[in-house]
Image (cartoon, rainbow, N blue to C red):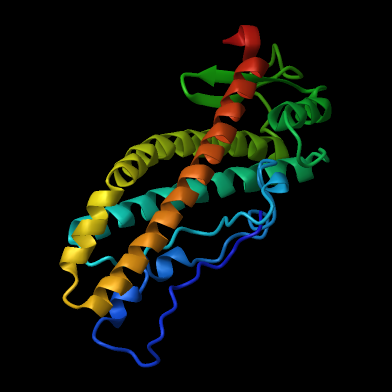
Amino acid sequence: MSFFIPFCCCFSCKKPDDHETEREPLLGSRQTEQNGPASARQTLSVAQNDGCKRRGKLMMRRVGVPDLDQRFLDVAETFNEQQHRFETTVHLLLNLQKRYACAHGGTLALTNILKKIRDEHDADYRISMRLKGYDFSLCVIQTSSEGTKDAEPLPYHLKRAIDEFKDISESAKAIIAKGTTLQELIGWLLRSKDHMDEQVKVAADTFQEQGRLSENLKENMNEVERAKELSMEYRQKAGELFIEAADIAGPHL
């Protein structure tokens, strides 16, 4: 997954004026953190078909209406958290695929990883998928020590895989939850577009400021549309992980 650095609106003014801060992003340096190398290159097979679609963090501009500025800020923070969770999920899956020599990309990532884990540890452990509510995890039972009093400590890589499956489940669950919140926030903004145009015009003190704030509003709504589309993709991919986990768990549910 490639990232496009968010751009700022350009104006003819060459020197800062009293309204310069209104062109500053609502989100500062905390939204420009460096992404991990894996998440910057790949997704759960989303990026391969998206062409030049922008996938960077959401950046919002000030529109001069406090209530609207806060709503845009809420959208940006919610989307960026969802995107971070999505990238975390991708990173964890890629780590597991690499460690267990699985093919990258495609579908059924959990299925292929679990098969490799079972193949590696089949002699000593019975490994299955457990699904409880909206949480999935690996269930590991040591078979080589059945009938003995003390079980041997789990191998490092197996213990790590258990932790990573748990983290994948938590991140996928958060992606879906953030997606629900984001749908509500974005829905309000899209329904209120005409009213927001009027609010921004009223908030401006001068014609020049009105043009600047209206342009900021336009840029914000473009970002909202981008967030809507990407958020739906993230949520869909997270949902597919839970469906796959349920299929793997099967009769063990």
